Image (cartoon, rainbow, N blue to C red; front, side, top):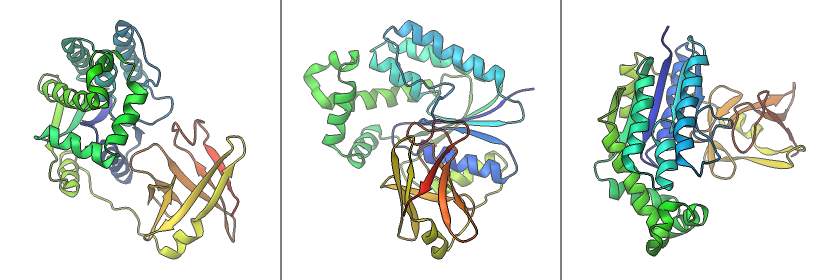
Length: 312
C-alpha cells in the first residue's frame, strides 16, 4: 500500500509552516490521522540539526533518512512535512558551495523515491523573487537580521568565498536558493501544486488546496475572552528551569513573547510556525498547568510531553 505524503516548500518567509499547520488541522478535522513535521520539530526524521563538513556524507545520509522513513511509517497515516524536501538539502549544500547540479540531482533522486508513494508537493513562489526576499529580510529585522545570519553562518564556504560582500552575501544566498528551487520544481518526478503567492491571499490558497485534496473546511473553534483569560499566567518547569508566560492580548493568547496561540479545542492550542502544541490542565476550579505534547527544539523534547506548573 502506498504511503500518503504532503510536502510544503517555498522560499523563506513564504508561509510554509503556517500552511502546513493549517492542512494538518484540516486533515484531522476531516477524520484522518495526520503526523505533522515542521522545520522546528525535535528529532526530525529527515532534517538534522548537525551538519556534515563532507558534503558527500550528507548526500548519502539524506537519501537514506528518506528511505528509512518511507519504509517504516504506517500506511494509514498521512504525513505532512514542510522544508524537508527542498529547503533542508538546498540550504545545507549551498552553505558548502557545492556544485548546483549535485544539489538538483539529489533532490531528483529523492523525488523518484517519493513518486513511488502517494505524494503531493505544494510549492509557494513569487515571480519577483528579489522583492520577496528583501521583504522577508525587512520583516525579520533588516540589516540586524543579516548580521545575525552572518555571525551564525559566516564561516561556511559559501560566505567565505564571498567575503567581500559581508552580511549582504546572505541576500545572494537567498536569491540563489530561490533560483535553484524554481528550476528543480519543473524537473522532479513528483505531483506538484505550484502557487504564486505574491498577493498573500492565503484564504484563496487554502480553498484551492482543500478542493484538490477533497477536504471540507473546518474553522478553529471560537473561544470567548473569559475562557482565554483563565489560561493567561506564568508557568514553570523545574527540570528545564524554564518559565513560560501566556498573555492575553487583542482577544488572543500569546506565548514566548510574540507567538499567537490558535485554539484547536477548548483546552488545546497550536502555534503556526513552530512545533508547539499546548494543552491546559485544570482541576474543578482553576487552571493548574500546561502540557506541551508536540516535540520541538525549545520547550519539549520528550515523547510523553513536558508539563509546566502554573505559578501565577
